[in-house]
Length: 390
Image (tube, rainbow, N blue to C red; front, top):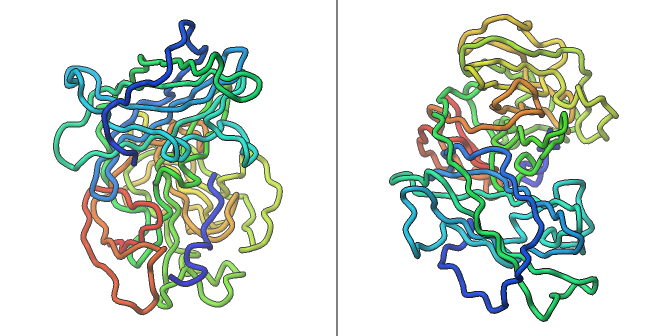
């Protein structure tokens, strides 16, 4: 990998071990922990890296008067296919638990674990459950949360009492995932795609009194050039980037419901200017492709948007040119599919590209070396994946 290949990406607009439920060594507290648990969006099966994934979040809020610590999260099949005594689909403890938990608000101090819940504090479990590409998926999932009840000294109260919540059911959505070609044509591209730890995955936004995760499956696209890097020269000018000015095309027929083409472009590697919330996506186009499916193409080049609101577009139609506007540190296309027209006030949903060729991953990509060339069908590129587009 060249030193700059991975680090010219942008500022964004979460497998667990499987095993049986372990025995509890401490007694269960008679009065359960006062927590609220919510799942804002039911998981829709996603197709990534040759597997199916159920990707969703569990919001956990402490409504009690004392601190709690989450010590375990176990996920089981529920519904008609659930079998008594069956092992968990996924179990999170210790390091695995810490990797999927994050505070719902601004980043906490490094010394404060997101597993610790002060009164009125919320933490979020970012779950990414993987399944083979054949066989049945669960129709529903049951979640078991185990808490330690803490006193002011941050130790277990009463010598080790625990509270277990074992009734959080989540239905798996049966919505069909759309297929379409990528919004860009030809060449080799670095995809900052979906993963459980990406910036997109963890970008929860509160709008109109509700938390949304519009970027759950978003991809940032950057083109690689003849030098096997995203740019030539020192990368301090937009024209240095191979992807700058590339045509951006509609992935499906639909109606333009939002468009903006007035945001000035940024200079790569320079501090981002202060900008209003409405300009975070920069110049963008959002197209409604189905009843509640919307595709957004963001950070377009100033003056390049070719369509207007209420215009009907065809699959493959030119929408604009790839640029570096809005909350972006280098030229790229931010691409996402959501269940609503708002860039950030909607839930991100998965999609499937008809075909692309897997070339490798940015972390191990060496200029001039012989690269992989594997045809993938009906998947999304994974995070840091390098692909060749038709």
